Image (cartoon, rainbow, N blue to C red; front, side, top):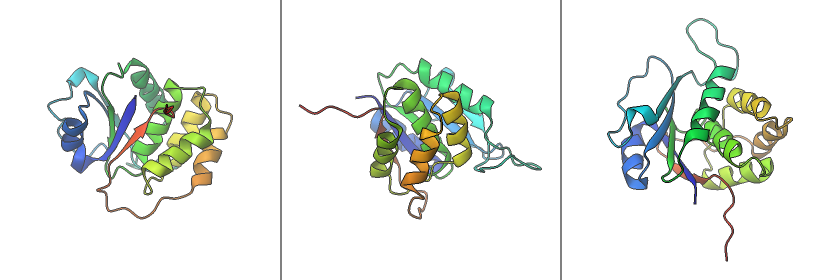
Length: 176
């Protein structure tokens, strides 16, 4: 089973070790310093600097941009899938769940966006994917608004304290 582990920053070392992750995507504001877990090789770590905003940045805030999402898609495509991919942001609630959806759709484009969004909601009652990242991913993956609509349909997640990592399968697993 190809899985993505979504985590807040505070849990990345534990989640990397617990799930055997060897590759990681970080979606962080530029001023947020952190250390890459030792089990993640530097060349298998993608660091994308952006703030968790859903509009074009002003001042020092950096909005998610097309280049960020293109790099995320390219990194996911190069993921060997032998071990889970760890994706994190500050709280593990907005930027990283959006990135997980985009990574999953880029790897398994045949899947239905609504089914994917519902799997995300089941995996995390707290996830509220960043709308700007989802919109850009929808365009780049040629989903014709279906990903945006699916994320809107699952609605805002429950309030979170930033300590709710979850595991998300790239596609529906067949049982039996």
